[in-house]
Length: 457
View 1 (spheres, rainbow, N blue to C red):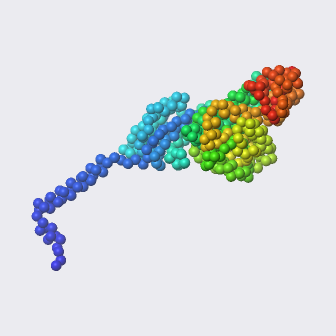
View 2: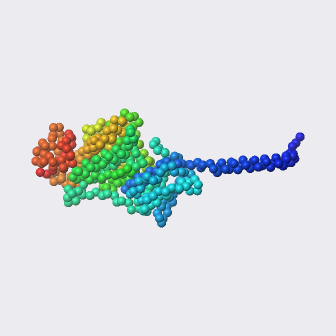
View 3: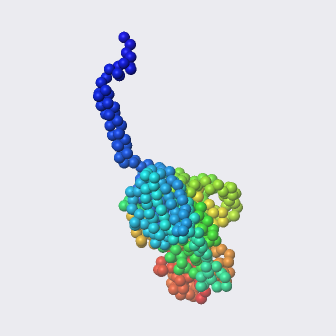
């Protein structure tokens, strides 16, 4: 028998029907209350906020728990820069950021449209901004990077003449590049030892030693804990009209047993060993950490690399590197007993001899312990300095004080077995003190193969 639904409903008592409708409405209302009162699930938490000051910009890094969309807004009167993060919330403190010396006077936060996180940077000066999202890597998760560039950047330091550089005879400019920096810590060793910290310390010691030698002008490419892109490192060396670019690193490898210091020059045909290629890939990836694509879209790059073999820049790099490696051999174990070649992006300057020095394996517990000590850092810097000094004593660039000294009959001597400073001083009729001053020596120790410039009597 077919059921007439209208007849069936009419047979249900009115009171029952009203109670059913009321119960249904109560259920719908309860569901709505739960949906409204449930906490909003954020797309990403800002777990940490980090800040670094560089000579020409300020970098802020937001460490995120996941990917998120963002938008930015610049406001005037007063100057502010706003970053909105979609469906995000702040779980880090903003009160301890090192704002001194930056264009940021205060950082504020708030919730916008119920779900979005708004960060407001109150500014004390006009800036040019760049904001980008970085994907996770082996050590960090998603990050939003905020760069605030000074609109009136600090002028690049220029080479200056020393007191000894009379009549316009210029100093030999050495661009010293401590690798990594800022949010790019480089390799890590036991106990949280970071490559960026170790190499900055070695670079400063090398700078101090070279500064004591008449005719040399060392300049640090990175002077603090901030990131510099690989291209900008090369560009700074060229802006300084450097006679040599030296990039200081402390490498790492999958095997903790890997050990030894290395010196690298550019290879135009690829790496000379498996380790060289691994290290080149690792170091070149630093620009990805800093937010800069390695593909620089430079149409002149192929021509520049071809010109390297014609100008002699690469030959100078290899020969100079061999002298440095010879000096390092007296301080540390060598990974390879010759200058290796690899495609390090930081070495691709067309007209500046360029070297990358790996001072040891920070992934090796024994070498990491030595790299952390001031005594070892000083010895490594001294070895690098002796190699540099020996090369330029033999091949001084035209127009430099050292070149003028050679033209005036300036004498030089290559240390042989059995030589002492006192014997050399007596031979040339000068004092030991004058030889030490002229060559930046702090002690009476000399090494076989070392070249000394002998001052006039």
